Image (cartoon, rainbow, N blue to C red; front, side, top):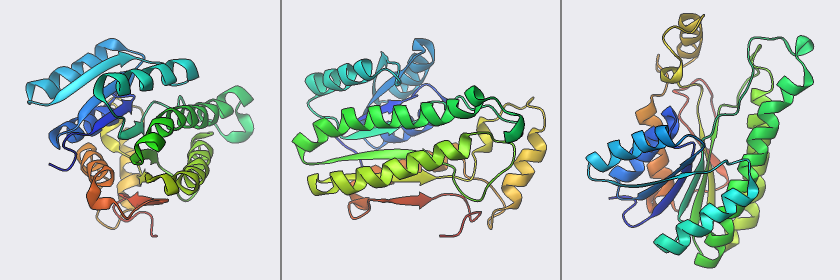
Length: 249
């Protein structure tokens, strides 16, 4: 198994993407520590993992609260012995559908502040332990690319996370810590079936790809498991492109 014996903290582990990553990590042997603000969704994912023979722990953690993030990371290491993988997948709380010139400052900056703040706090907490270990992997999730109208501050938020990822990779590399982005062009499975305009959005996402489809939740989990494993030990300071060809690197 790719991640046997590893301890992975997944912030937003009760969500669709966080849950998919957690299941993939657990399948590959990791103990997954699901962190989030809603106990019920975390426990649902944990039960699913345990039913399949995997190992999962849950904790209510607000990833925007630096003290809470630090205390949880400390508790994971105290109880499990290490913190090997950190992946922040919380919602960015973005507001979409409003032109930038008509958007309030609060709505515009909300995803930017959320994304950059929580990425900094979670990465900092993990890196402090990983430095002592001399190893670790910090993953980020991004949808950057050509500008898209009507998404408010979302792509600005992704850009901020990318800048932080590059800085972290530079500073943490000498300590044996890798920092990578899973780059997606959009995961259509996370959109509710009754979401207004869903069909048009799906068609737009899939129409830009070379493969004629968008990446799935399983794709995200599988690539994340690879990125966190020793098979990718030579990779840092870069992204893993799972846009199905909508973005060309």
